[in-house]
Image 1 (spheres, rainbow over the protein chains, first blue to last red):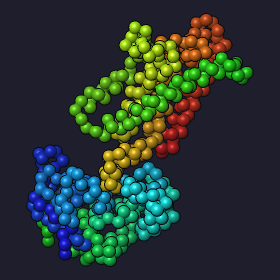
Image 2 (image 1 turned 135 degrees about the horizontal axis):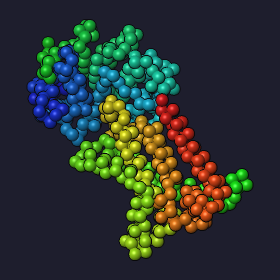
Image 3 (image 1 turned 60 degrees about the vertical axis):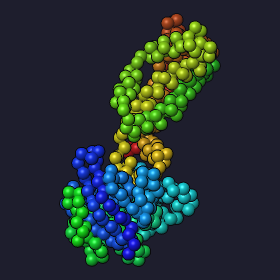
Amino acid sequence: MTACYEISQIRFSYDMGRRACLAIDNFQIGSGEFVALLGPNGSGKTTLLHVLAFLNIPQQGFIRFNGEILTKKNALALRRRVGLLLQNPYLFNTTVLENVMSGLRLRGVQKSRAAPMAKDALTRVGLAGFEERFARHLSGGEAQRVALARTLVLDPDVLLLDEPSNHMDVESVRITDDIVLDWNKKRGKTVVMATHHQSDIRCHVDTICWLDGGRIRTS
Amino acid sequence: MIISGDPEVFFIVLTSLKVSAAATAASAVTGIPLGMALAVNRFKGKRLLLLVLNTSMAIPTVVIGLFFYILFSRSGPLGSLGLLFTPSGMIVGLYALSLPLIVNMSVLAVQALDSRFFLTAKLLGANYRQQGWLILREARFALMGAVVVGFGRVVSEVGIAMMLGGNIKGFTRTMTTAIALETSKGELELSMALGIILIVVSLGVNVLLYVIQEYKR
């Protein structure tokens, strides 16, 4: 298995190094691997996901993504190759379709091409017919699925999920589970999921990592 | 006078609306991006700049008028431009009046956005310029509200219009300056007619603001 992420000696803090939120010496995630990040609240799961999504650049150490070292210059280009589903996703104050198309439009995809792609993604998350609904009027589970469709439509190399089942109903959890599994097993895409629920860890997970105080312990 | 479509009333109303709209448009075009940049960027002296902006909203209009009067007067540094007692000179003064207001309201509009919005914009791969467009779209109702308030402020002010426009009949006379003049002359009919129109304009501006705020919900 080739390495998707190679992390070496990274240190990240939100307060200019006064208190390290993340201190990982060596960590690798293989291409097509399904990794679960476990740990209590405040253990650094979300911070690590933000680092893996290239939202936060560590103050020390380096991250290699598919052989390319992360720098400030290429952070945006690398960010466009990963998708992160936030724990409590934010939907723009517009229609569901506009929301799902937004990432595509930012990549310069014409509306005429983006719209059918977005509709297809909505169908995959079980929200066909929701296109013209106003995003602010959706339930928590529906909003989460729209955010998932918005992420999947970009066809990222890596799917990062932050506590995906937190705001979802049973139906939404089932649909999300199926999509994530399909993404990982059939399409061979890398998936990293953070959770503090042991029950979220299904048999399809390849690696379980335990995080504590910003440090990682792989099982 | 309103019903018969008096040409003098018509011209005064049109002048008022034209200079107010031009000043507000200029303030919106420059003030909104400035407010957005102020809200999202961190830099040394930001608090001081915001404090200055807040203070500048409280400057009396006659002081702004006096400042530009000195600048535009024949012996002033910008006297050669010939802006004094012209609609263009009034627009400059009214622009200075509405700019701090629109900048401030834009800062507040952007700061009121959910912090997850900025994270989501970055996550979806927006570059710096695209983030600006997304902010503009997301905060559009609050920003439109800022423009409406800015227009309401300039259309109803009298000090700048009087000092920089000179209240010249058929050229720079606006609703507010005409009301002041006609009332002092005892010509209450024209004053009343213009007063009613000004109230209708103010009401229209407030109704527009209300509709924008309701739509936001």
